[in-house]
Image 1 (tube, rainbow, N blue to C red):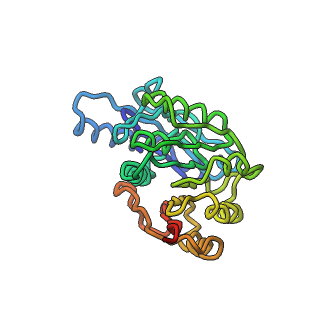
Image 2 (tube, rainbow, N blue to C red; image 1 turned 60 degrees about the horizontal axis):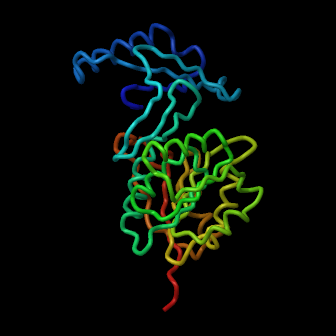
Image 3 (cartoon, rainbow, N blue to C red; image 1 turned 180 degrees about the vertical axis):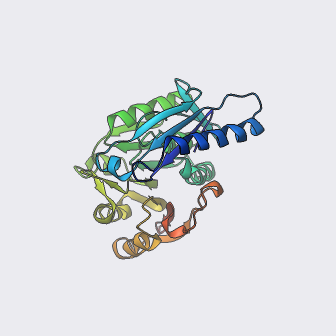
Length: 283
């Protein structure tokens, strides 16, 4: 993954399979390629191991292999700036494979008529969707995430982009109460981008359905829902069949393509980003 000026290599191999000799070979290949791409520029790269033994403990091992990492580390995507942290944790502050989802949102917010789009951003993490929506002319974004730390970075991301109004930040477990969320609705767009499995907070196989049931009441007439799922073991049918059962009035519109650089040998196992739309008001 590229978080300029840093490259991040992530391995999911079993413990012991990333020998020092292998890492040295990889490092030499990266250095050779980087010298061809950016002659005279230093190579900065980080290695993170997420083998099964570590994942079961909720841990990772991260090492700076060469060069340095800026502090603060800020990256830019389509004119938006985001704070990232590649030396700690599994999630680095910005999910690069969601770039096309953010591009889709930017187009929706730009094209929305009237006073601007009202957005509900569930599982907001560091609020990248919110920054993009408000940059593109959205009127209001309600960001909801139970992680106070992630929401604090989300607020910093808005400040980085000079956004001072339009966003609210609710550090809240949505399953404990929907009152605050529904009172701020209805919304022209609801973004649902939960973790696929996070023990104690969200398990897609049982909890995604609880979100789908809420969508018809959260959406304004003609409003859109952006449903996201990054679970290789769950295909597009997992989302589509449940939506047909639990929110049949919402119509499937499209699957947003993943960035070309994240091409997968099996589209069914890749990131899923589906668009649904609520019916318009009857004439």
